[in-house]
Image 1 (cartoon, rainbow, N blue to C red):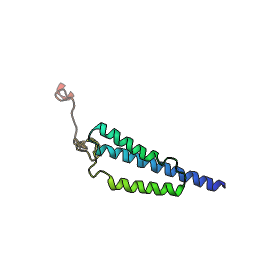
Image 2 (image 1 turned 45 degrees about the horizontal axis):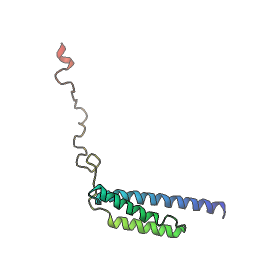
Image 3 (image 1 turned 135 degrees about the horizontal axis):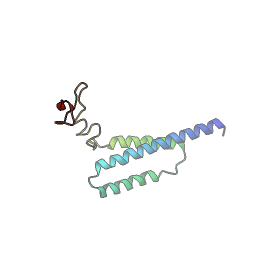
Image 4 (image 1 turned 45 degrees about the vertical axis):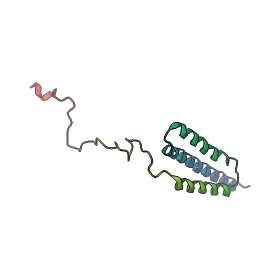
Length: 119
């Protein structure tokens, strides 16, 4: 193997590892949307981990790419239609509930104790 083909192989494997990591994290986070109780989530998370671990020792690059594509397609097919969003995160129910006031408006935090009353 030449140096360039080795570098190409290493770069492709690194990209595959990253895609698998991202797919696993997305699927694991989406499992929380489907599980109502934690004990159900733990079992589903364990099953998900087993599905990834079964194919851990596959070495053929084309097979790995095909498996990643199949996994991403399956994830997109079964993704939760209404995922849970933390209330204060963008898209949550409390996000920008109290927006910052527009410029030019002064907020007095020491109401009743202003300096101009001490003339």
